Image (cartoon, helix red, strand yellow):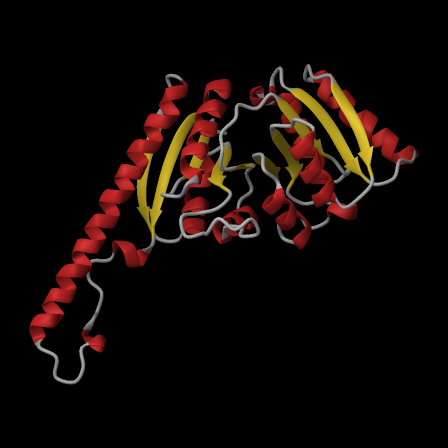
Length: 284
């Protein structure tokens, strides 16, 4: 697998934070960055058929004027996209000598992910996009579509960059949460970061054994991890712990069983991502 971070950037307030996080990840892992800005087909089109809008004897000159305006808008969208890419690359390279390949693409963002993810080790995206407002409960629709579509880990940036020092790992014994534990154990991104494994539920013998296995996996990767079993709803527990206990990064499986079922696809994880104020790594 190519060690490349496929980074999807737009003009939102999250783009600056996203690029700082990607620079931090690339510096720690030695990864290259494929920085991508996707123009919708309407933004990039210079040949829209406007004749259906010209009715009731409007002059042909108006059609020509509208066509010229459409072409100007397409050129402006492309120039804006290139500026976004240039700014993003400059932010990423503040973190070190990092290879950044900038790409301006046209089409649907999920199609772009499908075409480009084979060469990537991770995807990175902001929690909310350029078209979103800043209401706490709004979650970017592209984020949900991308997480459903991709097979790669997804780094979801929050709005304010802070270099992570302390990692919370949500664990329920399911396949994707086990992969999350394995990723933390093996990936240099998490080297020397403090780790805590949390399970939401009631302690029992099987759970204690699962937690012991997870701790052993992290120990094999050089991590001494604290463990916690907390009762409550997963989205509330994880949100409160990241808010009040000093965690800078949340790592979790994108799908789960027990009370963290249907991550991102279902309402539990969507609600958690909405409320969580730190970046999140979703592992498929």
